[in-house]
Image 1 (cartoon, rainbow, N blue to C red):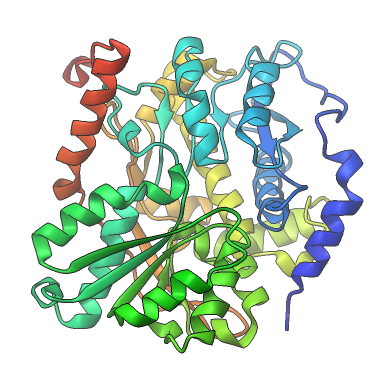
Image 2 (cartoon, rainbow, N blue to C red):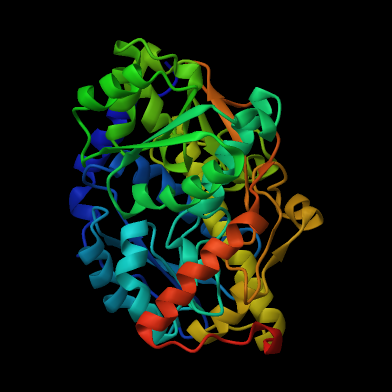
Length: 446
């Protein structure tokens, strides 16, 4: 096997003292852009977090050392360990929202859906954009109600739609979904329950049977759930688990004789950390991939030359270079850098504050030519945000585990965002009524 997750666990334990909230503060100056990083290098999700932060930090370091910063503005970052706990992420946010040694904050990576929920009101009050790529609160796609929350790239409703569109492509078209039985096995949390609304809508439209089966955190025993799945004999299974519950789910499904080729993991159930612990049972498993695995993209060649081969990488074990969570970090960092670049085009080549960061993200536009220029062609989809659209992407590739590596088996599969939008607006309107928010007129925004 080319990669051993036990090494990540060991690295997490060895690095504990260096990864708590007691990390010495980074040096920063008022003419630098501060990026706070709420990380989880220790705890149950460290195997995901360690390569994630390495990808983000490697890209930020590349921008500083190879490109001289963003139009000359250097980036400075500081980690704050959360163990993926929302209360700790809130502490980290409060610690850093005012900036660092005069360097301002333009946005805050929540790096977790529960944290996005926990920080929603604070980010709005402080006018600091909360960025959660491939996660977050789905209705915050509607920027007229949520000006400071961005579920960029692929929100949970779109994930459900992409999954259904892929299944339809395998069945011969959307009209062939009628009468099919689709089971969602989901992590019983705000994250896991996010797709219940869109799956109900899609089932009503296309006529498939929608069955939802919860798995309680941490999901280390799932025999009852997969026994039920076996009895139901579904045509397809959508696996929306997280952390240790994913390999447990895959292995338990195999034990009950369920074909892994009929299981599709969502975005957060499709990394090496999800399949390697499942062993041979995972071969043939598929997952949605707005963050595809692989190190053959142009940006990886640049990073290898300038960061890894020069000993400057945050990645202690280079076997994890180009793996899914490393690429999650790269893509998050690239989106942030391009947003800051868009903001500088309006406000000048200087660090941005939170209000300017909001404008920057709402004017982010990464087209095919820009993807090629920054080396992300094929790794990141084109993305364009606006006041009314804080998602901006809405597509994913489907990748399959061959027992050694992830291989893309589709091009970008689009979500039916037009169909989903009324459901998003219904939920955002309910939130606005609850909080007494008067939605912005996005037609007047510029």
